[in-house]
Image 1: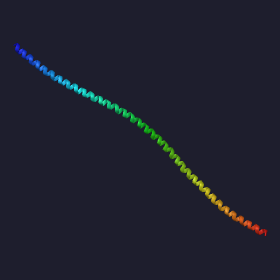
Image 2 (image 1 turned 60 degrees about the vertical axis):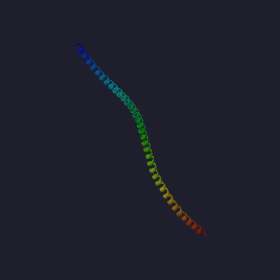
Image 3 (image 1 turned 45 degrees about the vertical axis):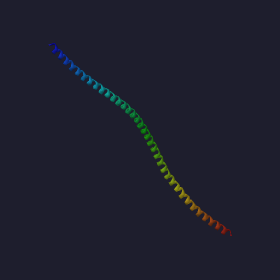
Image 4 (image 1 turned 135 degrees about the vertical axis):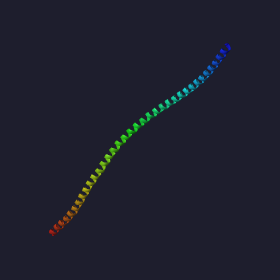
Length: 130
């Protein structure tokens, strides 16, 4: 009797020790996995923080680029308008210059004609005095 109970108790104690050892190993494995997961989570959070900083920087760069583009577009529009003004102003000026040249040419022709007439009048006067 007592020996049988003792053997059963020893067997149960051995089985409990094995179960305890197995559970302890499982606990160690679970703790190692938890530690690894916490490390990966920390790395992921650091990467996320870094990406958020990069995103913020890129947003600032985008805003600066958009402002520069808007300013360049405004300057381009202003320069285009000025170029049109100069081009059409030059055309108007060229037309005015051409009119003046034509008028000068006409007046030169008239001067030549008047000088010829003056020469004839002087000749007639000189002839009449004789």
